[in-house]
Length: 145
Length: 131
Ligand SMILES: Nc1ncnc2c1ncn2[C@@H]1O[C@H](COP(=O)(O)OP(=O)(O)OP(=O)(O)O)[C@@H](O)[C@H]1O
Ligand SMILES: [Mg+2]
Image (cartoon, rainbow over all chains, first blue to last red; front, side, top):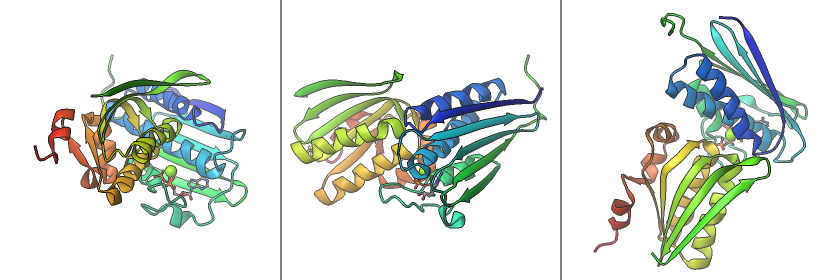
């Protein structure tokens, strides 16, 4: 399999979250992943992109979110980047049920951690946040024809 | 059922992302949801339910999720929020017809431990009625 990279750059609008999900679902389908894996990948992309819009940009329209998919034979890497407010305490933000919004459940990072093999969060206050998630691809599986 | 309303939501960029079919009978609201329950649609669902609770005194809310294609934390937050709103009013939130792939996501959130799930609308509306 050849390496592949796709980037989707979009405005911080709620309706773009489903477009981001469509991209990951199409890519995941090409990788021969199970329906369950595809569902989980849609959830993690939805969570990271929603966080960028809701928290990073405080639901203001007109800011830019970047979604990058890096595919190689071993792994699928998903990167979601915003240039928003940043996270002052990443360790605290990653705690299950932690949220700065009383209406929210603090589930986003729980899903990202459970469904992916690796999660990295880099953030600088007033500069932005980059979330990088990796899913290892099973190479032992015989390829379908 | 006294009132049947169909509400279709369109977004400016094109596709319909969620549709509600709403039935109201006395203090019971039944909503059949269709589509994706995410950041785009969570708010309109919250408003649709809260309006019935606040303005019409609805105390039992039954949500049929049979045609829900996708849910994430924004959708789950609205469900838990309605449960929390109804609780002090002596009301109830009931969820029916949850597709397997949606239930898997819900399970991780712990929601099925708090909210009552039913296989279908009939079982949900019978339970707790004391008929
Ligand atoms: N891109 C981001 N920019 C700024 N802050 C963020 C970002 N992503 C997450 N956070 C912070 O991390 C917290 C935890 O995020 P997480 O997604 O786990 O929960 P949530 O978004 O608050 O709730 P839920 O995901 O259940 O709706 C958020 O409340 C927010 O304070
Ligand atoms: Mg979140």
